[in-house]
Length: 204
Length: 384
Image (tube, rainbow over all chains, first blue to last red; front, top):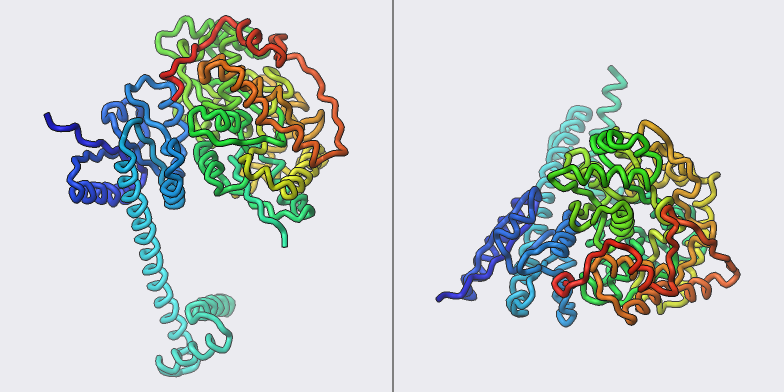
């Protein structure tokens, strides 16, 4: 008889983060050679029977998820054969718990699961949550870089129109003024565009 | 340089003392930079408190007791040196359920006893059990609701289904029909009433007058910082006196209404502070002691607070009865820390009569618990 594979349940309203985590857990388990089943629940409707159907060894959930109060109370009164408990039960691993909280992860683990196993799942989860945050930050940065370039182009167009100068001259003027005022070019461009909009509206 | 103290809170009217301490400058006057962190759930607040991400918290009074006893969680020694608010909870039932109650009893909305008896009559005729919301297993909302149901002969674990829902999600759960009623702190009852979703049928002030609802909870290790804790308690004392004064209710309501605190209309909060919010279309609360922050020795914790919570935990099977647990629960509340920080305060704690005239007896908790016909026995299985 083969050993029952380890069942991990991800509860996350963010489907992208859940997908990143799911993939990470599968890769890690195939490297370790242990059999793992990863299940995913996105919405909380009728959640207890769905959890019972999966019968998970580990539940991973976003720390900020407001449904945690509901889940914990359900675990407490439920007649589930194996009751998941908050992972803080083992104090000896407080470093891992700290790292998890910092990353915004909370985990519920059924009793009797080997500590090293929990630890490795937790490590993957933490690194994937961080990876998701980085991805979001990069996306945010790319977005704002694009916006900066747009606004600088607008400011240059205004300068070229008003001063009758070339694009290169307009760029030099912007850069020098920004340097003298100790501001970012994009910030200067933003106030220039705003001021121009005000003046045009006032003049019309 | 001011000492930074970080306090977690859940958006409820009774976080007022912490908000006033920060916004009215009472904390700064004691050399404390009080930073407030809003939490989405009690589980999240507990985790941040236990791991030292915050120094202290606006906590359900039973929360530091459960942590100290290691019920439902790993044991973390906590203390409660200051009571942040007395009362303020209420039981709200859906408009539809209230109609049923009034069909079986014309006086169903006359008070907690009448409402309870009418609810019991409705429960007996139903095939599917009612679902009622409360905030957390270790909360006065859970204990208030259970006490009131059991008074009416409704067994909270057999005759109805109780679910925990974070306070800000309570009104939406009622609207969506996920619950038939709930017990929660304000402003969430008043908001349900204002939106025509339900009626308030009992208040905590009626069920348990002078109940210690929220406390300032901290890890025992943090309480060892005598100087900082002393100044913090003095700041909270001044803030509580300010918040309790009806002349300041409009200003306090405006602060609490801000999106970074409650994000609820100031007018609703102000009527709650005055204790005259609507119960439903039929009446108003009309109780100046519905929720209070300072008067009647409100801020002074007592061992009896801990023993009352111990009694409820034992009655509903969360805890095995034991002398040690009872002593530990009593010792969570620290009148000594309160008095050390506020030595000039000498207050006589008044006595009150609850709606069922059964006074809590700290002298004999076992007899107190045994007198009630309905219990849930403790089993290892339930102990976590």
